Image (cartoon, rainbow, N blue to C red; front, side, top):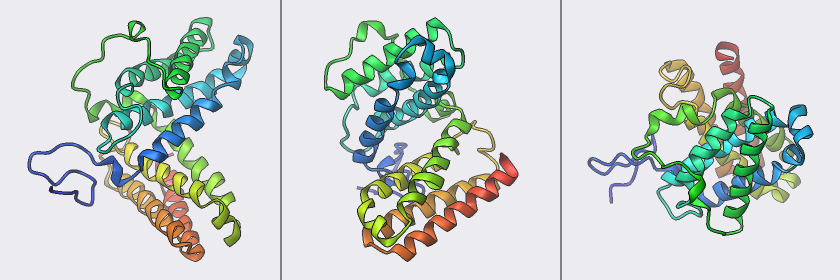
Length: 253
């Protein structure tokens, strides 16, 4: 086997598969999908809740889910829901786009997408009759269609500035929340790769890509520090990621 180079691309001759497992584990992917799906409930509890701002929450969350299930569909290791991913990917992308407007139609489409996600989480087969035929040959240049870059960066900021920061308040909190911190670090590392995919804004800007890579590298260092129980190293990794994010915001906000 050829393994992978530092970019995560397969080193086998002629191989084009991206080795997502270099960035995120299957367990983190499924855990994050469950978290986001379960968080959709309040925004979709009623049409009025949806119209009064819930549609924006749905737009953000469906966008993130579209990216996550796209990764599941391309994952280079065993992972749950790989068969369902290509179908749901396109439905979630469309549901997110529809949620720009707080209409009855977008609410109904969002409910259908949520019901399908709930079925997937329960291990029930999806009703494939409601899905359009999945386009063959979906490639990396289409990532920008799944989610707008600012929505993904919103999740990155939440990981770094809230969830990781709160969990690293002390050495004790690091020990208590080690698994949660590691998962947040992996999500941060994953999204720092996705936001540099072709045709996203600035994807071909060397400085922007370097800053995103610095965030991803710091997230990897954080994950390693959590595994080692090294609080000082974890704090240094967070500082590095925060500095790279701040520089990126100054030039590319």
